[in-house]
Image (cartoon, rainbow, N blue to C red):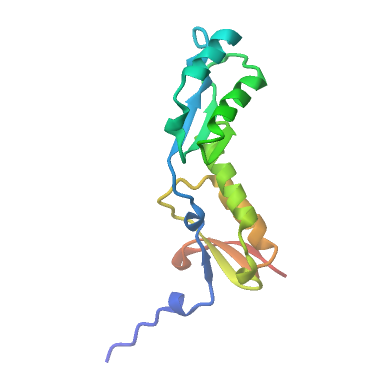
Length: 168
């Protein structure tokens, strides 16, 4: 008679923390300031303001927006502030930086607001595989928060976890 197969992963006390569950739905969009610069390099205030005023900002309704400048232009701080002020009534979130910076900020805010109390004194595994764009910083933020209260922290999947932290 064959020996019964026991699923030890299902029986373990491990709790999985999945960063994808914190991923807020919504389109991510990048805005490049160079589009409003003369030859992509020089900010001429009058023309810049005119271009910004003529832009259809409603297209960013319920989006997450990253403002950046892809050229080596020296752009004054007020330029991105002006863009952000136009996006404010429409976008869910606006940051200065690339799309990875945007994702990092989104996750940082989500993790600050997350209630980790259910992980108190438990062995926790931070799920490693993601189908959504989870930035590396999100894993660092999650580790820092969970490590303060968990018995242990691992990374990966239950069948092949990498130990990260164990309380002494």
